[in-house]
Length: 160
Image 1 (cartoon, rainbow, N blue to C red):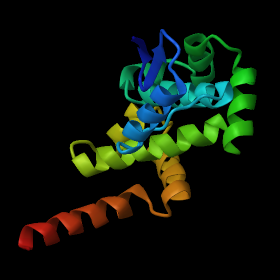
Image 2 (cartoon, rainbow, N blue to C red):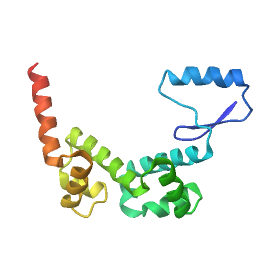
Image 3 (cartoon, helix red, strand yellow):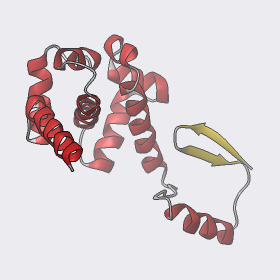
C-alpha cells in the first residue's frame, strides 16, 4: 500500500521488509529511479519538483515570487529551504532556477513557436537581453546562436 504525494514522491503506508526494499530498488534502478531515504535529500528533491512545476506554469511564474512560492508550497521558511538546498547541492536555489529556466527556454526555442521576446515574457525575464545573458552564462551560447544550431540540425536531418 502506498500514497502518491506529488510529482515523483510516493510514501508507503506500511513498512517494507529489507527484502522488499531490495527488490523494489533493483526494479526501479532499471528505470533510472532511486529511492531517497535521507530527509534532507527528500526536501531537496521536493524543492526541485516545486521549481519545475512553477516553471511549467507560465502564468504563475510571472505573478509570484519564487521564495514565497517555495515557502508556502513546502511549509518551511525560505531561509531553511535555501540552507538545506545549498548544503546538499553546493549551489543556490537561485542558480538552480536559472539553470531550469535555461532548460525551459531551450525547449521553447526547439519548439520554434515563440519569439525570444515571448519566451522572455513567459519565463518572467525583464527583457530579451536579460534572458540572453543568463542563457549564455549557462549554455555558452546566446539564444539566437542556439536557435541557428537547431535550425541547421533540422535542415540536415531533413536532407538525410
